[in-house]
Length: 133
Image 1: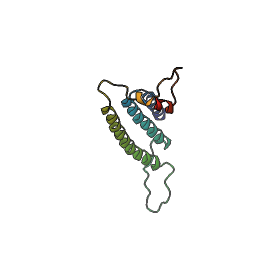
Image 2 (image 1 turned 180 degrees about the vertical axis):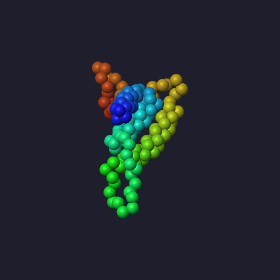
Image 3 (image 1 turned 90 degrees about the vertical axis):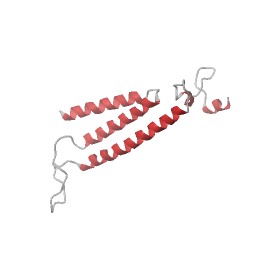
Image 4 (image 1 turned 120 degrees about the horizontal axis):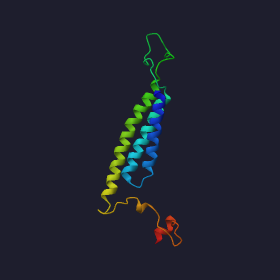
């Protein structure tokens, strides 16, 4: 039952992450990237076997973990990914705040400048043509 709940949590986090990343608001994109990292961390943790297991500690004289021991590698990877993800989200938030600070007060479309303008036929202009105009 726990595996199904974890799979559902991964699906919800992943779906919400994709929905937020595709949003037009920069802050929502950052939150979506944080949720995507959470979904990947849950997936890696689930791949390391869900359930109770013996601690991954070797007794004196043993060289191999017991078959029922918890796998320490996914736990270490997820712990490292949490720290890296936190640093990435902090950097992304500072970057978004710097972008928004350079915008005029009433302008809320922070990504509008990155999109090419429309040509006479309604299709986006190539990057070089827009630069010349």
